[in-house]
Length: 340
Image (cartoon, rainbow, N blue to C red; front, side):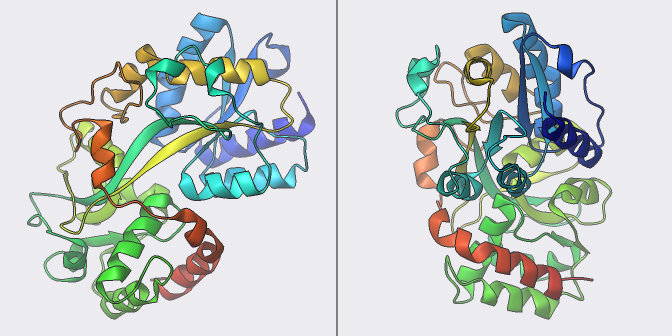
């Protein structure tokens, strides 16, 4: 265990507000894996970590970090990876590939390889979950919006909570709003201009991690988000429903990748094999986690907005290779113009 890895984990624990498992330096088998703060961290700490320990006697140490924070820390480590496995959405995944941060991945090393749909592994990593982005609303406070444009109109705009481009769901939603006003995949200025017009009416502007809490507390009653957040809130007893916008919901896959230079390659493959296994995927689909499974032996729960992974082809998919070069400027502009 290097100083860099200890520092990363300590910092991640502070960010996530969690305590880390003891005995890092003494574990016989271990994997340090990133996870998203919130539902992902809760699910992997509660479900995956005990399963991995029982199956392979591997201690799973989790570093809760958003995707671009993972990329930033890995780049700063200069070849001494602070963790063994990344979890990323499409945009940061491309950044990681271009930066050479991942080991070449061999999906056939997974015992569960045949249980994954074609194309769910490549030289970079493996798909571990699907996500769908749309609109969440409180049915007791506002009527169901039909599409992205409704968010900027009464009665929804005065109960709207918005967040910026730091996440895939935020970026995807703002792109779709922009398209309604003459924008495009690479031009989000129309969305920002329209949001600025109604900013005095908007109920809340927050960081991505804060949005579920703001919704739960009633500080906003409509927001753009993903199905997983909606299902998690519903599992906590919150009045919330999901709407697929009339122009189409946005879909993407979340992937995992083995860090280049890790000395835990074998254990990383064991971890990833468990993550995509029937038992793990089935456990993660259940409340309060509500993940969309990728293992073909696991049925998709009825409450999720798709009957099979084949439905993903019906959703809007964005080209993140075109988005990535523009995203940092978008984040800066949103933060500057939407501050309340």
